[in-house]
Length: 63
Image (cartoon, rainbow, N blue to C red; front, side, top):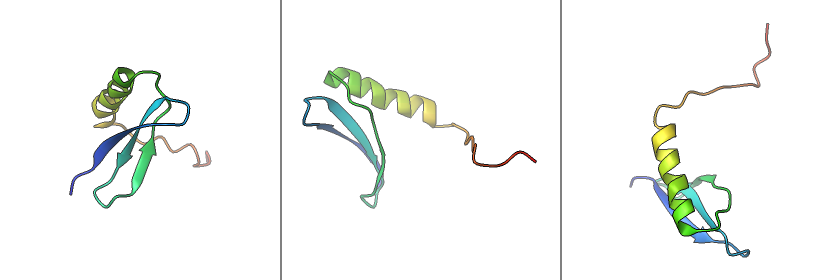
């Protein structure tokens, strides 16, 4: 099963999305959005910008 984005509404009435893996594990949770349209735009931004994102590991000590 492929991963999916799940949109929810929190206690404060804000919309959030989470990225859920095919095995049901939550991989990421968004900030709160005041409108559902803004939440959907956030999902589209992740789709657009993360497809070829690099990893910047700042935990590695400079030698």
